[in-house]
Length: 263
Image (tube, rainbow, N blue to C red; front, side, top):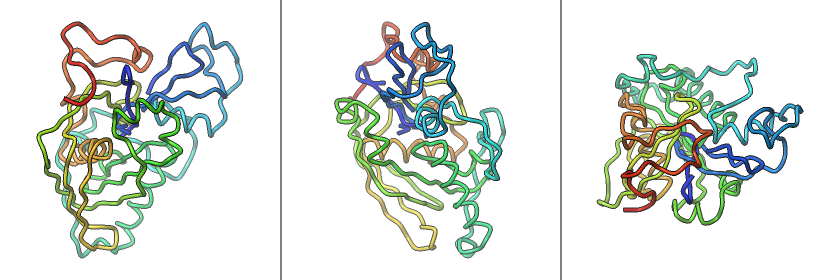
């Protein structure tokens, strides 16, 4: 999931503005300020023809669903419309978790997630119909977003998580509305209502049981990624009339749309 949104709330854990680059990603949207390389031809205020450095592209792309196209040995991101993104994924046989094949899939997923960078990734996004998710949010990623924004999102850093055959259930009726984005739906965002407290159980990459209680932004990332395993994209759950391009992310919501934030 790409990192996500604003206050006015702009993950997954996402935007271009006239200000030297307000950028934001979750599978979620977070606006970040990038004072370094400019984006050629993105607005009349950004006129430098200099190309972005690879590090800047990675930082910005994580929020925008944009990225530098490089020749790598990593799998490509599968885009919306491919059946693998719209059909339920298969469970991983626990006896196969330690195999070279499954371990390579996990390694590839982590590398793709970090290279993008995004805060979460599901196996179907690299064309593999297996129930595996990876997620990670770092202090560095969070530092790109305004403090009032991350506070509203209840967003905190957490170490890399690899969860196989995850099962998610809500722990409370509390919900929140924020923008989300996704590498598989490049260049767009929409508001999604998610539960604020969830429990996820599954298996780690070592085959051992995992139980995780999550809240706030981490809970949103988990829901976004688990949705992928059921063949659901965030646009399947978006609040009507909130879908927009990343370039229009700072524009006000249409009249009648719900206010962003916790319910």
